[in-house]
Length: 122
Image 1 (cartoon, rainbow, N blue to C red):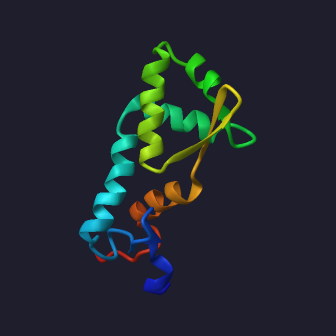
Image 2 (cartoon, one colour):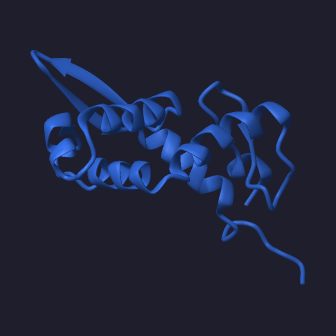
């Protein structure tokens, strides 16, 4: 597999390869860290899981709020962090907001840590 095939892109279009193949640039590390930091909270990780697991690909915020014992404003804050990290996007329809994952962003985070495509020397 060539180095070109191993490249992943961050949300700002910066190209990087899995960390076992090549060191990240400062810009790529900053951008990707935003996504990992957002996933470092159990509530946000669960929210992302609930959204990603939904058949049809999107979930109404009303359903997400009902899945937790947290207040609506707290859930909104966590969803905002996920949005700002580029992991989810939303669309307002009348009084409700519907959330869906951003597959390319999740794939970039996943590929960054994927060591299966790189031969490691022992």
